[in-house]
Length: 159
Image (cartoon, rainbow, N blue to C red; front, top):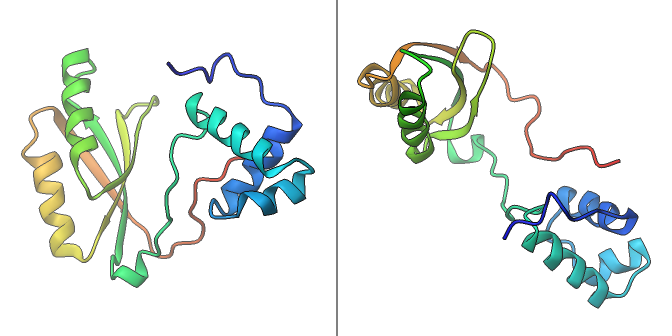
């Protein structure tokens, strides 16, 4: 059961989250010292936030250049219609594609915005054919190729 809607975060929880967002490998004893709690209390709070769905998962942010993933494309996708079966079909295809790093269902005249990473333009073209050109739910798409990776991450501001 996801309790994130009912769990209230206090100052300790927020301080722990700020630390974990910067480096989720910070030892719990170091977190405890910084927030003035015991390591056991920090461990319980982290477990409770994971159980509540506040902490969704722990991941490593990988440098795309180090893996020679030289193409980052921001793609606007317009569906043929916005009926639920069409949206669900597109959502499933995008969710299943390993090249899709991020996917958002949006308003404003387009249906989805995706962030796609590829090793080169040949691979990117193959991805666009598979995800968009050969997908009867997609009416059109527009690619914006990133020239430079200025800022990436998943950290949110925690007041």
